[in-house]
Image (cartoon, one colour):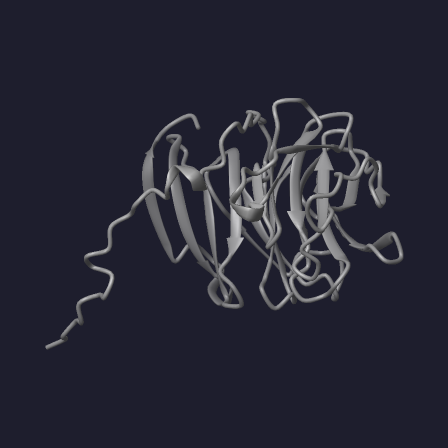
Length: 262
C-alpha cells in the first residue's frame, strides 16, 4: 500500500500584504497582443501603460519605506507587444512593437532618470513583432518573432545569427529551453514546432497543437523535455496541454478549463 505524507503547507493561508506594501496608482493599458503585459527583474517592474508605445516602470523595492514612483518609458511609435529583461543584466530591457522594431534599453540603477532613447534598435522586420525572449544561457542573444519567422539576434554584433522561417502562419509565442539548446514556437496554423537554431532554419519537430487558432502560448518546463501549451479547442474551450519532446506525436495530457472568449 502506498503511503502519502501530509504536505507541510496544508494549513497555509494566502494573505494580502499590508497596504503600505501595495503599489497603487498604476494606470495599466489593455493591449491586445500575443506577448507579455508585465515583467519583473531584480530591480524593476515593467508593464503596458495606457498610452500606445509606452511602458510603466516601477522599482521592485521602495527606498527608505517611501512610496514607489511610477515612471514612463516612451518606447515605440505603436503598441508595445512584448518585452523581456535579460537574465544576465537586470537593467537591460528589450521591447518589441507593432511598429516592427525591436529596441534594447538600459534602465538606471535606481532613483535616476528613465532613458530618453534606446541603446540599440533592430529592424524594421517587415511585420509587427509578436514575441521576444532573451536566451537563457548565452549573454546578448535575443529571439524575436515577427510574422512567420523567428530571428535570433546577436546584440553585440547587431545582426541576426539565424532566421527560423518554416512557419505556415503568424507566430503566436516562442520559448527557449532552459539550457538554451532548443526553441519552441506556437503558430496560428495550429502547429507547435521545435527548433535547434544551431542546426539550421528548419524545424526539427512539428506537431498539431490546439484545434482553434485564436491564440496560444507555449512554455518550456525548465531544462526538462516537457512543454506546456495553452490554447483553445475546436469548441472554444480554453485548454492546457502537456507535451514531451521525446514522444511528440501528440499531447501527453489535455485538461479543459472552461468556455470563454478571453
